[in-house]
Length: 154
Length: 148
Image 1 (cartoon, chains in turn orange, blue):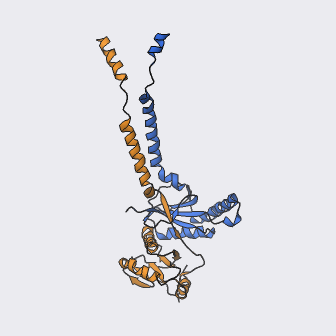
Image 2 (cartoon, each protein chain N blue to C red):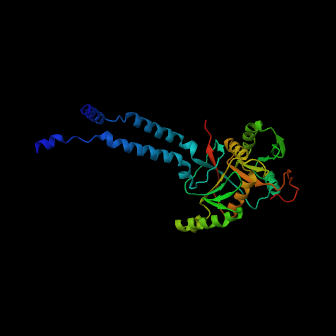
């Protein structure tokens, strides 16, 4: 009996380990990892912010200058385009038409501090996707929409 | 002597490769698990917002992170106040210009604001202002590419 057992162990030890499935799994993992890199790795959106620029002054400058898109996101969810309320769903149609009248194709974006960051990124993304070459980030002091006559803005 | 030679068997390659393959899978798993930290120079884990438009690849950059509680981080260092960002970034920009041997490059190292998607815009604006006070010329908001 003891002799029979020793022969069985010896035979088992000589069976080679099949590494084929192992290497298949590893290769699949590597390929999946490589394909998912663009969706895992962080990238960025350039923004422009001028410390000296204040919203009312910029509004006046914008009237004189080339800037045709001035987007303001209110904390209550209202979106103002050039100081008029607008349906956010219409923006992808309106923005390219307004930017077509501009040479530099810059856009101003301001938002109340209470607005969720993700929604601001969505609007920056929308502006860039619709042809804005540069998004100027502006700061508003209060939740009310300042007019060019109002003092302060930052 | 001839009998000794007859007993020598070729090495079982599969027995050698099996542990090697195991180690390789472990290394791969660790790399996949830490991919984000490897590429962003910081280990602060955040839910970064997604966007379709991607303009900048983040390579050599200064990361400023804001977690979901509004706490600011400079690289991995937790900050008690947003005002601490300005001197740290200014020093880093100066070092960057010195290393490059061109003083005119001061302010040109990319600064990345990494904000959790659930935070308020006001927190991000304060970070942008702090970075701008350090005379940074290249400021980027971190996003992850949207699928589809």
